[in-house]
Image 1 (cartoon, rainbow, N blue to C red):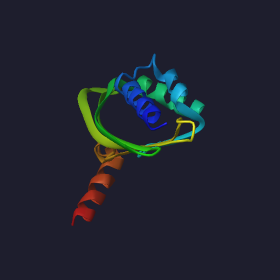
Image 2 (image 1 turned 90 degrees about the vertical axis):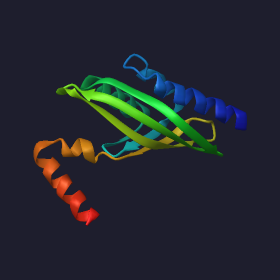
Image 3 (image 1 turned 180 degrees about the vertical axis):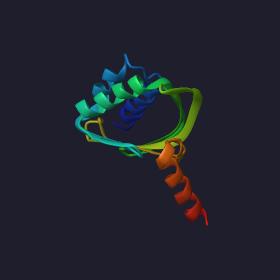
Length: 144
């Protein structure tokens, strides 16, 4: 089963590294029907909700790309270090680059039960006119 989990996770990383609006539906092959997918900007439960959110990424973002830079696994828990790049359709001049880590928990059948992305969303939030000032202020207060 250990080598099976490695193979499943390798295909899952490859799925994200080649993610496109056309390939989003393939997420269903990896996920439990009750999958939970979280990041700083979303929290979706159920494979249909996650797939719908992924399609929305491609409606809102241009050139969205993930690149896995490293990974580790212990039992049914895996971590992947990645870089994400994209342009926001409403302001396509700026290329955004984010770095993060995913925590991926597999169920007993080797399907993704939970996928949680950890990354700093504050640069995106700072770009929103009124909210950005609040986020910048909060970061300055915390930094002391």
